[in-house]
Image (cartoon, rainbow, N blue to C red; front, side):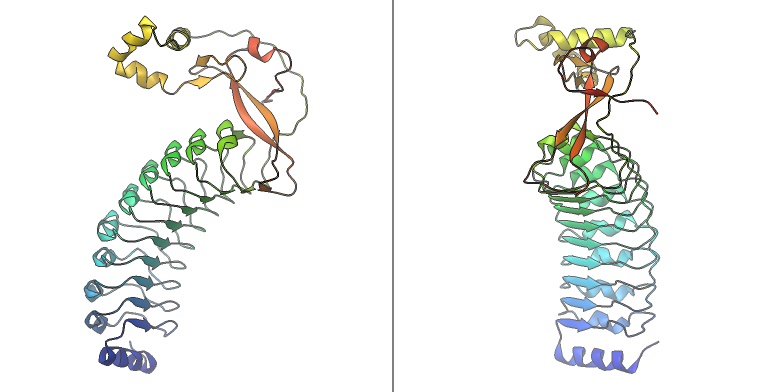
Length: 349
C-alpha cells in the first residue's frame, strides 16, 4: 500500500538522484521496491511506520550509511541488511524483534552504531564480535538473560547499554573490551560483577543501579571512573556481626594448589620450571585468588570478606552512598583473625 505523500517524495528522489530520503511517519506497511533504484542514497529514514519486512531490492543501496527503521513492526532483524556494506548507523528500536540471525553481521564491517532498544530479544548471537567497527551498542528494554562471552572480542566498542533486561551475570570476558568507556547495566538482576571489569582501563561511566548487588569486586578500585551509579542495590553496610570460628578442612587438590602457588613465586624455583611441562595445571592455577591479608595464592576454598572504601572526590557517585563495599577474599580463618586488617566477614543470610 502506498500513500500520495510517500509516492511524491519517491518520485522527486528518483528524478533528483537524492542522497537523503525521509519517509518517517508515512503509514507504510511495506517498503517500496523502487527504492532499489536510488543507488546514490546515503541516508534513509523509515521511522514511525508499520513495516514488517524489507524488500530484496534494499540490497542495491550499497552507498547507504544511515538507516532508521525505528518504531515499526519488524519481528526479526532483516537479513537483507548484510548487503549494506557501507552502513555505519542502524536504528531498529521500538520494533518486536525477538531474533537476530548471525548472518546479518557478515557484511556489516563498517557499522559503528546499533540501536536495538525496546524490542523482545532474549539473547545476542555470539557472532556479534564480527562487527569489528562497532563503537556504540544499545540493547535497553529487552528480555536479555545473558551476554555471550564473545562480546569480549568487540575491541572497538566504547559504549554499551544493557539497562532494563533480565541479566543475572556478566561474562569475565567483558574485561577484554579494551575501548569500553561507558557501561550501563541498571535495572537488571545482577548479583555481582566480574573481576574482569578491572581490565577496562578506559571505563569512565558505570551504572549498576537497581540490581541485587551486595558488594563490588576488588578490581573496581583500579577503574578510572568519573561517574558511578549504584543506588537501589542491597549493598552491605558497615555493621559488625557475631561470627563463629571454624577450622579449615582443605581438600587434597587445594593443599596441592597452595603448595605450588607458594613455591612458583620464586623465579629460580625448580617447581616453576617444571610447571612449563604441564599446560593443564597452569590453566587451572591461572584462576587463582590472592589472600588480601597474607598475599598467598589459593584456588577454590576461601572466606569472602569486604572492605569499605570512601568515594573519591573525582567520582560522581549516587548521593545516598558514602562507603563502597569492596569484595575481597582471604585464604583462612587464621588470616581473618589477624588484627587491624579493616576487613569485615560477610554474614550468610
